[in-house]
Image: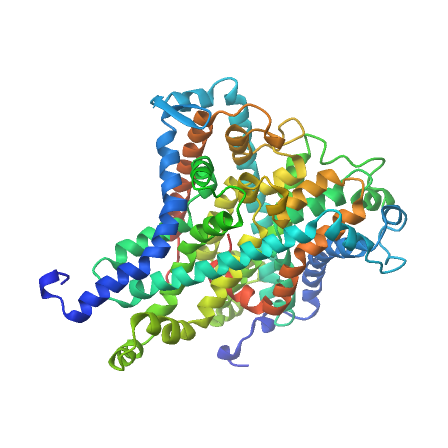
Length: 284
Length: 310
């Protein structure tokens, strides 16, 4: 074996790897067992949950899901969360790409200052501004409003999105927009039809991490939403846990429903998420 | 260079287009993030009546924050946040490093384990908190398992016991975010040239020795990122406490954090009952803002200086 061909595997003999595998498998169990219990408990009645802790349910009945969706009105919460998440993702992508395009590709003389202003927002602890934000939202008539949530989430996610878009757009060759400009294309057309399709990885990073952050957020609905009709899933769940404390099957089912979209997205996009996080810790 | 008289027509168009293109993002960001944040910092120097700003009060809000009856809550919450940070550094980021190192030494299964370990991190802390609240409840599955193994007898009250509750929440938080250090450390380890490990191996270094003496110094940027992220997340901790222990940080304030205390001062206790004190809330917010900004800057500088250049 040459020195250059070394792989990490070659660093360790086979038998010595056994304790390491055990450690890894143990944590895998620590992650998967609670999720397994969550899934099987969805199909059990409360009595069955107590009698048969770890086994599969007697039958795969969907009673708990139906109850959660209708009686506890999780269906409405689910639709609200979809609207807010979709709205915030689209708004964030559109305005951030628009801002990042001139900031990364024009020579304005003030690119640096403006980028700095946006980037300073990545770390700002916005929760601490929630009192003034509450007053602002009340004055704008945006309390108890999904539009209000969309605007706040977009505002919070814009710094990260501008950062990602600017980084991806900066490295594209300048001939791209110059050639299009020669052909008489307007700046909006250059951005949306030429530049944006070239930075698809940036679009997916921004979309994935904005969607996760918005779908999961609990703090802002807690402050801004009082009317049951406008509650999002995490807010509804926090109420269920206390309200239906004795109906464990129902609570487990509503937890399963609320994590379903994220679970599906994660199975489809696990590689992109792993790489996105590994590259820069783009979470939170 | 940007003297308007000497601009070409392209540059003039670009200046105009740039303003038009930046304006929507800037307007939303300035209105809903920068403006409320600046107003909150400014407002912490005033007296308040409900949500109305009264007169300039200097540092009196800050002074009230540290004395009875607020002082007890403040120091308690601050201590819980500090303990939380060290708990996460040890249990999440320490164990995460071990997992990442074990995955790095194997060329099979890394993607699978990474995906499994990271999955809880894409779930809402509300779901994670609710799930563990059910699992750890008296009569729950954890009690049944521990009793069955003979490790425990009777009802499991770890969440209701003020000596164990905080540690339980830290463990749940670590379970939630374990995938983050694993992903960041593995990415960092893969950037290190294999020749360095081979050279160390030829010098007779053991695996442990290679981790401590070779990998760790080269992982400084990753350690810095994680320490800073954990610091920020810990001092913003709210969701898990709210869902598992309520906004009072039950039992008897033993899991209270700075943000749950801030929330009570600003919006009242559960169901919007209880007395709010906006002046105190804003002073606490300003203090937290300073802790977070100064802490983050110091950490970034500290780790920047310790980054090894090859």
